[in-house]
Image (cartoon, rainbow, N blue to C red; front, top):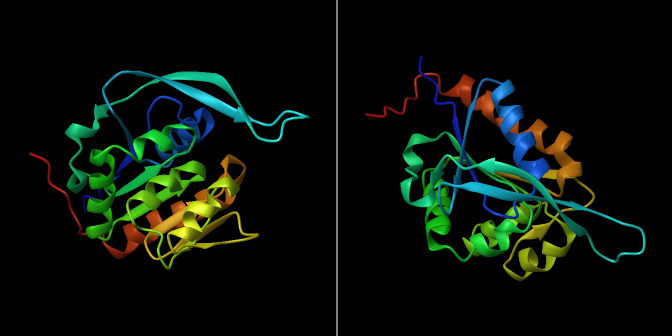
Length: 199
């Protein structure tokens, strides 16, 4: 048995620190191999989004620095079990990168799991993957989801619709990752002989 444990994470500058670090550490803890893809191989400037009294929307502070493992040009979707798209401000510019859209569509076309949380859903919207699907996302992405045919869920913090699992914010991590790891474990049990051979 050679179960593929590589999980691709797509992000970039202004990605949400907590969502990216939590995903990486949680996957490593469970025995998976997170691989971070960005526009280029570089040290990324992550951010922290939080709420302050008196503000009508979130504020952004500098977050941790984190190295990407490879660029979008070097991503071969066939090498990965599934795809994870964290939020932050990165998705608002990454969704305009055709390389990202091509990667996401390739995972979908191959019937692989796609996990997206918070503003990461903006990339699913641009890739045309929310139409007719139940979607959880940050509340200010709701309009984009609904105008493209998606069904914004409430009050659920996370939801699974087929092979796409979405969550609202980093505060939804418990519900979101419960679904994520349920899918990963079911996949491991159902397809023990599935292999991806990398030469």
